[in-house]
Length: 561
Ligand code: ATP
Ligand code: MG
Image 1 (cartoon, rainbow, N blue to C red):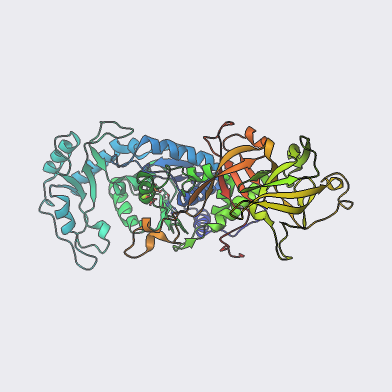
Image 2 (cartoon, helix red, strand yellow):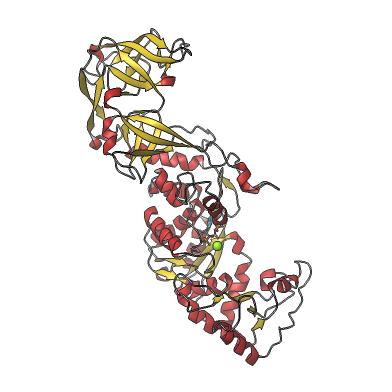
């Protein structure tokens, strides 16, 4: 990628200016990717990962992986493990593995400091009452009757909350800021709530948990993050994060600089963990790593190369405004990568029998097939040829126009890596369906048997398999998960209404025998059909392939740019 130098994105421009103005030194740069472990990472996160880790590579600066694990009611170790796997698989290495929960003690002390300064108070109202007093953007909120509790009382209650002496929902700790601020987040935001729940890392040590807003900015500060990059919905949080640090750390201490970029949305899918969780829980898909999911683990299982995801993220870059990115562009990058790396093989998905009447019964021969014309080092393999073959049903017509370059009665076509054949006759069942095609082959037309020039040329080339040598496999063919381009932004409609009922079709594939040796995770090009990844559950006795993508953009929405 380095050879095609692109212009700097606006975040890089900010960093360059900071370096020039010497507000930051290159040695002081540090970034982080801060997921909340409440679901699996998706393609939107991949953008953010590529941005943060990309900056780390560009400036040779460390990048932390920080789990913002402040809400034990939604977070789990399973998600932490999956996130680590996914970031590594995408090809990035973090410097430190950090957790907001490592800072619970420090955050608690800082909250006590706010209480001592008269800047925080325990509110003992129900959450509905607190919400009702919030006001609206145009009307100020009302003060809580507990707003003027004494420091002593606040201290005592807050300690009791920490010690488990009060039930969930009975008290919260709030910052005492400004109930008439035009920024709603500054209207005495809640900093702590009581939750008698085990945390995946701190166990039962705490029953008092910080709100995300009380933990996030301080976590960045503690880790010495120089540039704290997040999505646009955090613009208004900046003022609150600044307020927090203003009152708990010395003025001359270096603060993280927060800058925001637009959240990415993608066509024909959803990228909200809450909605993805709904798909999993409702069993619409087969888990977080279902190949139809826009999750990193789903894309991995689908056979997307990590490099393709990186290239895609680089191409779409980052934006200041939200827009919808067409997923065809990701598929374009997937094909680009796989074209270089995937071995070509033959399999037939919708077979019809082809009998070569002038080829001796019982005879077989092993033909040479090139593995990857884009990569000579991949060499050749042998494929068996015999009298009875399968070809794709749609590759034969009894009659067809001159534009049909496949096989028709009386016409010729080449069998890939093999001979030229001529179709002479076909046999039908009582419903008129073709069940056999009879053809003759030209023994002097074998591929690779002479120089390119001496070989006779025909327009069409077909893929095929020898019936007696073929191995059967299951192949899962995928379509868009949603039939609507933007399923979760339709007024008064639930996104689940737009599920594509045909997003998965399972068929039997008749494969050349070499495919029985394939291993989970490998991706092959089934010639003329698409790229297929060997599923993680596949074994020689029970082969299973997931179609990664077709060979061409069948949705044809990819703009030329
Ligand atoms: P979700 O809405 O899927 O739950 P989130 O923002 O709550 O997403 P986090 O785990 O907090 O999920 O996200 C970690 C980082 O990834 C954040 O910095 C967030 O801004 C970024 N991120 C999440 N979704 C997207 C997206 N669609 N496009 C770009 N960045 C994203
Ligand atoms: Mg979030």
